[in-house]
Structure formats: C-alpha cells, structure tokens
Amino acid sequence: MATLKHIASKNSDYTAIEAYLIYQHDEFTGKQLLDEQGRPMLRESYILDTLECGDYSFATACLLANRKYSKNNHPDDIKSHQYILSFDPRDAADNGLTMERAQALGLNFCKENFPGHPAIVCTHPDGHNHSRNIHVHIVIGSVRTREVERKPYMQKPRDWREGMKHSSTAQTMRHSRVEVMELCEGAGLYQIDLLNGSKERVSEAEYWARRRGQLKLDHENAALTATGQQPRQKKFETAKDTLRKQISSVLYRATSFEDFSDRLLQQYGIAVKESRGCLSYLPAGRTKFIRAKHLGDKFDKAAVLATLQANTERKPKAQFKQDTIGKLVDIQAKLKQGKGIGYERWAKKHNLKAMAQTLILLEEKGLTDEDALDQRIAELDTKFHESLTVVKDLEGRMKANKELRCHVAAHTSTKSVAQQLKAAKRPAAFEEQHRAELTAHRAAAAYFKANNLTKLPSPKKLEAEYAQLASEKAKFYEQYKEAKSELLKLKTAKQNVASYFREEEPAQQER
Image (cartoon, rainbow, N blue to C red; front, side):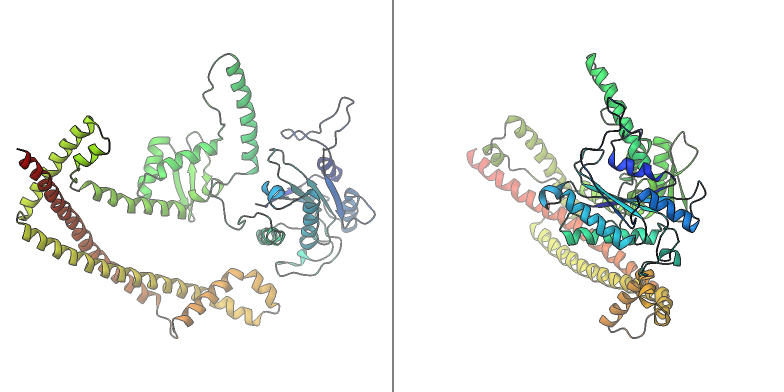
C-alpha cells in the first residue's frame, strides 16, 4: 500500500535537506550521528538524483531561483516541499520492487507533478520504524524556474507560471494521491484507497509521541523485570488513544445521541458538542476541545449517528428473544451422545419448566384442543406471510422514493454547474475543478432516463409520499411482528406437547 505524505519546510539551509537524505540521523532528535572520529556517518544504502538543477547542486539551484525572482526573503516563507512516497513492505518480495525501480517511479512522479522546480529524489530501503518498506523522498524548491504546460488540476496562474511558488492545496494533494494510486496500479504494486479517510487518524506529532512513549515504557519495564517485578503496562497509549477507547466503549452501548453524551460525561467526564455539523470532544483536565476529524472518521457525526441507529435496531431483537417458550430437550438422545448425570438433572428441570410454560400458554389462548391449535397456527401463518409481503413491497417503494429524492436534489443543486460547463472557455479545466458536481448531475440524468422520467416530481410531494409509505409500513410491520411472535410460540408449544407424549408412551409400556 503506497502512501503519500507532504511536509512543508521553512528552513533556508537547503544543504541540510541533502545531508538528512545521505547521512544517518537520530530518529527522535534529528541530529546527525557521528563516528569515533566525529565525522558524519553515511546511510548504509540510498539512491539520489537531481532534476531541474542544471550544472548546480540542489541547494545552489534553489538559492539562485530565490535571488532571481526575489522570493523566500522572509523567515516565515516556505522554502521547500517534501513528498514522501512509501511503498508496501510486501512489494519487494511479492511484486519485485527494488530500490532502482522505486527510484525510477519517484523520478517519473516528480517530472509529471512538479515540473519546473529544482528537485532532489532519494530512495531509502527502510523506514525509521524498521518495517522494511522502500520509500522515496521527493524534495522540491518552492520557486518554479520555468513556465510549464497548464494541466486540468491547476487552478491559478501560480500553478504553472515561471517565478511563482508551489502551493500544496487540497486539490493538488487529491490529484497527487490519485497519481500515486494510478502509479501503483500501473506498476502492479499493492495499493489502498488514499481518497477516503481512515478510521483512526494519527498525526505526525502523535506518531512520534507514541514512539518516544513506547521507548521510555520499554526501558522502565526492563528495569522492573530485572528486579523481578511484573510490568503493569506493555503498550504505551497517548491521550488521544485513551480518548478513542473511552468513546468507543460508550458508543457501542448507547442508543441515542443524548444517551451517548450522558454516558461519556458520567463515566469518563468527557463533554461532547456539535458545531457546524461536526463533533468535538473535551476530555477531563483539558480546556480545548478535540475535533472528531483529529481522532478518526468513526468518531464524526455521521458515523456516530449511524452506529447509534444500528444499536437501536439491534435492541428490540434482544427483547423479542427473551419472550419465548423453551423447547423440550430429548434427554435419551443426549445421554446416548455422552452427556452425564449432571446434564440429565438439568434437562429434567428444564423440561418441567418448558412444559409448564406450554400448558399456561395453551390454557390462556383456549387452544387445549389439537384441532383448534392447528387451525390457529394456519391462520397465523397466513397472516404472517401476507404482512411480510406487504412490508417488503413498501420497503421497496420507500427505497425507490429515497433514491429518486436523492437524484432530484442532486440534479437541482448541480444544474447551474452543468450549464456553466457549456459556456466554459476551458472545458477540461472546468470539468476537473467541478468533477464531483458534474458526476452527480450525470448520474441523476442517467437515472431519469433509465426510469423514463421526463417531468421531475417536486421534493415536497416525494417527502409526503415517503411519510405515507413509512406509516403504512409501521402498521403492517406491527402485524407481522405480532403474528410471528405468536406463531413461534404456538409452534413450539405444539412441538413440546408432541415430544412429551412420545416420551410418556415408552414409560407407560414399561410400567
């Protein structure tokens, strides 16, 4: 799974970048490692190339570009950008990925996506976490030294004109991630979806906090083990890790947002607030809320509400199972299978309770006669299947109504964008910029055409129709649940009666 990470640097010492790539550094402090003579130690293995630097080094080319275009004169200016392309550790063994091949892929990626910038491309065989993943560092000077061909993803003149600075916007990062995915697909390497969020977002700062905390904990545990004591904790957790665990433990038990927020506050002292459609969490002891997007996608509003809805739907099923009649156990068959005396005693008590429940039910329903019982079971079976058929039909109509409403809303909201595309001076660039809106508009048009819809219904009419269907479904669903519940009880009762008399006949013959 190739991943892409971006780092913007304000360091004006461009030689430090090359030194980091070719010399060994302490992974926590970032300082160069020196040998016994006090000289920097080279990395064991690396491949390094430069692009767009001419006859100069990368540092000199960047300094000349800054001087020529009078850029990067302020300490807060971004002097360089680093993109790290990390490949899956399995690619080396399974897909034949070598350092030379990774370097070639990195060079092609740099030429395609950062033309005109002085660049240095360096491949390392392993990461600081010793996962054996080959990765490529692509470092570019922030100033473009020549004008390049404009591409669809480029939004402003600064993205292609000479003397302008590179800007890593959301759209350029999205484009770069798509390029990485296509690069891996073309090269036959492992890849994941880089466009969607992760369930657990770990920032650069949190990652290094985990590494430092784990190292410190390992030293403390080693000291405890040496004295014969047992370590209490083996895995270090950051404050965000603890917060994620606490939220998850409450989330999967709550059934409403009020219940969710109350449980968090009572059990862990965590406050929850919603602002502009996003959730934020305030753990005990903090004064600043932590946004859900910094914890992971499963903690945002949409995911939380979906989980709570699923919990609500599961709860009635558990209540339904409790209100049942126990089935009689075939004790002789179980004894032949090797069950012992203890199981036989339990089974006899269980059968007595189940038979008592059966007799009470049949007397309450007035179905002690076998013919009346069979007739009632047949009536309930017919009612059950009829209600189920109606419920399924209503669910299908509700699903179609919801799908139509979504397409109508998408068509209405994107109609102006589709009209602007026709009058756009640069259709390709406009379409790249509004790809999501145009895709939704075309999907809606295709849906209308497939369903022969020439005149679109009003959203209010569709909402009223959906509410009517939901009301009818609720009514028939109640009939379906009642018929199913009683049907299962009566079938179990009939089976228990039959089993009881089958066991009584051999006993009477023996007496």
